[in-house]
Image: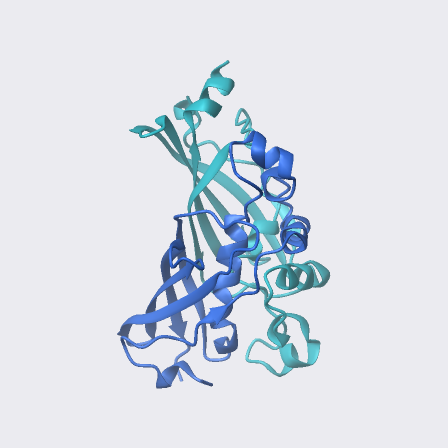
Length: 135
Length: 149
């Protein structure tokens, strides 16, 4: 799809399935974001915190989810992006990103967005308000 | 425990939306789109320059809120929002600061949890607000015990 104008309420953007989460990705995100909380990169620290292993930064998942909209920045932008962190993303999890157009009011498009893991459980969910530029 | 800190603000800090940092960030979230990193694409876009991904403000320095000493371990990120007036431009300077908006406690399945609501803002060189972000940090009972110590 080249334009969001073709999308109707109730329809979804093409979902994206990510590669299995690997350690190097989380190390890169730690470096790029400055979030060096060791539960995301160091096994012993994750275990000490009571986790079975390292977990992805919630903000990594939120950042990834936004890419469903990256192709559409010529016709609008993300005005509002709200996420609730629901579950943890572990190493080797396969995360799928989804967005469904819930509402359309003039130039404001409200999407329900979520990321689910390989078991179909929501790891993050929320809303994106996308504002279309007046043509 | 943090109630007395509500309303406290950090000092303002100038941040650059630095080209290399945007590229590294875009790569780390698997979103190396030309609108973020390719100069030519940026120039030919409606923005006349590259823009940054919406969660990029995670990178910025928001200054220090005096008296707020959060541990870097044992915190749970509950919610996060970003509100934008327009996208962030690569190469611009953004002045950032944070405010403690709220703190409350709730009894949950894992004991008494603390909820800290932090608001962070970024203004452009004209003093116009570009974005506001809000994060809710959950402080578990175990961590609260250590903090009260």
